[in-house]
Image (tube, rainbow, N blue to C red):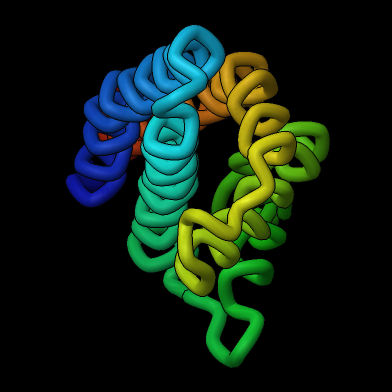
Length: 168
């Protein structure tokens, strides 16, 4: 049994509900911004923080996969973008792609926004952009959940492959 694969699969499954909670919180913040215009800036800042948290949470999972499955974590000044790209690669005799190309393309917007949130004051964020990302967050999460669930299943199966081989 390959324990590290079981652990990665368990982490993927365990983190999905937390990511879903961020999706719900961001949507709620956007709704409240629309219904309470006097406090719109505060709710948009909250939504922006949840968008940041969403991508940061995914990136931690991608790092886990890179370190424990791929055994190769990108470095350099563009490592965040390279890590996302790495998740779309099928690595022969190691693993299938973690993310479908459509999922990765959608996540690139959240990666870019995470960088913006980390480097500007929240009152300088464009409310239209925050709203657009929040509106797209549910379908994006659905793609992510599909891909990560499939990958977790692959890891769980792989973790017991040596047991099946020895039973023959």
